[in-house]
Amino acid sequence: MLVKGLTAVSCLGLAAMVLVTCGDVLLRALHIPTKGAYDLIKLCGAVTVSCAVPLTTAMKGHVAIEYFFHKLSPRGRVVVDSLMRSIIVIGFALASWSSFAYGLSFLRNSEVTSTVEIPVFWVPMLMSFAFVVTSLVVLFHIFYPGRELVQS
Image (cartoon, rainbow, N blue to C red):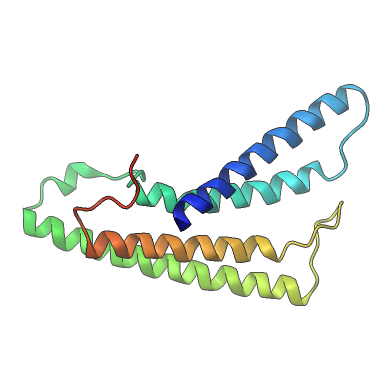
């Protein structure tokens, strides 16, 4: 449920980037530049990428180097897979904590975008939430190795 919700947010971010870019290009052809297009694209890009990570992780869509992995014994594969997934959980947990702290600093300092002055604290906080969900997805894969979390 959370994974699909974040995927919907990611899709909305991508659609917003397309609309803003197309609108900016068309309006520039009429010599009417769109104020804040760069800021909006930056915000939407961060939202799109971070909210797509949980689904990509749930579908095991990340790049893997399987050549060496298949050279291991079945027991070795389990050990290496469990170790890598544990490192990934820790990495995303740290990224989540860091993103949340970054968002709090933006909130305390009332940071806004440079041209249209949109508050930006919510972007790292949303990223933090997406990273927590990604950690939970990886934990699911550790505890239920044969089960699919999201059907493709």
